[in-house]
Image: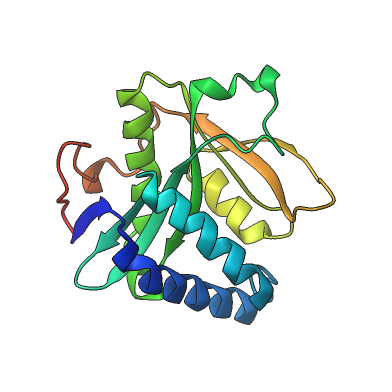
Length: 184
């Protein structure tokens, strides 16, 4: 398996990963991302993140996971949160085929290594306000709930952060940022 920067050649695989996640979430009773009208804007945002070198994929011949290290989303994070002190995780999606491998948690640890390399204090994220299982996942991964924001035009807004020094999966670390391979 390889952790690498996403390219525009990955767009179809990224959307397939999202659509797979939509179906899995729906089967679990979670109505997240299922509106087909949001796919176009999601794809445009992903394209911008890919072109800016912010989106990564885990690839083993097919895309197993993705994560974007995005700018702070100012719909949620305030200037008083010192947004410049954090790395912001977005679009963390793992394939159902990776279930049980802690791939999502390993990517969060990798995000922490990126924060440390940039002398940032925090790894932060936001997730859907109604996705309680995802919130519990982040809490198990060492995040603390900061607050919940509810702008009328957004369904996300549960905000979490953990210290960049936290490593939850030390026996399955992704390689440092200078290397693209990791143990699968």
